[in-house]
Image 1 (cartoon, rainbow, N blue to C red):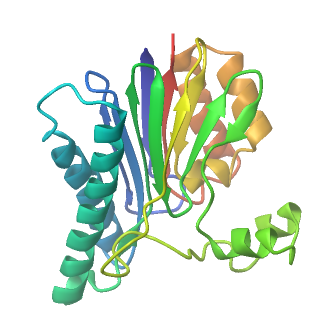
Image 2: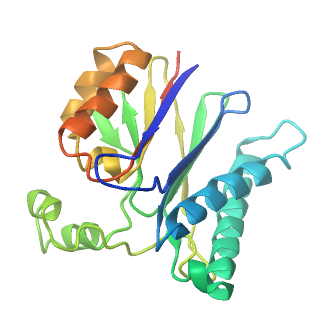
Length: 238
């Protein structure tokens, strides 16, 4: 397995509110995109990645798939509650929250979950989005009110319907996928997908080495505007 990752503050933001965690030895990958006032967003995303990583260290024996699914559920709920508690008790962090996408690979099975509008993609002969955006525009698309093209420019495109830390509990949906040789996984914040199309991501990843693909994705996101922080993890199942 080969893993490359990157984060960039972008062209306009002063702070990087994205955080990510990569542990190739244990095959755990976490990415979070924070939101809130001064320093609050980056605090929320840092808490999410750190709490989830620490929770997974409790797995002392060789886990099975159910162990991973249970820990995914527990760690996300723990992160949510700690962020919500800090937000509720400290005016400096009032209203903070974060998206999170995370995955764990065990015996070629990818266990994954998502809260918010950060995404996970599977790239092989095509590119497909594994996660569903917890966003207002995605809801409007699901009920047929707007098209995908209209969603891209909708004035409420950044409004989330679910995030970590905005309430005391959070629904956690967990899925798993059997990986094939040469499959590639992409975990990313919307700072990438708002600036780079799925087709552009696919072409760059499929036609370049991992390190060059990483650099080209950052470069294109910046050249196309770079209006938000840009963060992603690429996992190559070799």
